[in-house]
Length: 60
Image (cartoon, rainbow, N blue to C red; front, side):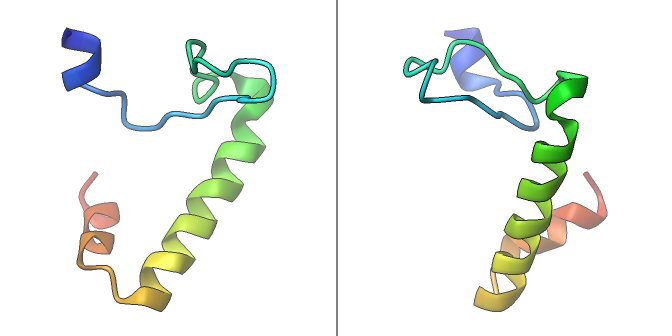
């Protein structure tokens, strides 16, 4: 239950080969470029949609 309630800051899964999302690749250096790309896409989407949670990037 602890792992479900207190999630890591970022989660990245290869759902094609890990459909149960059991191996978080966010901390794997091999996937750092993918994670950074996804972060930038998220930030752009938040800006585009006026997401009030976008402010969290400044202090987290």
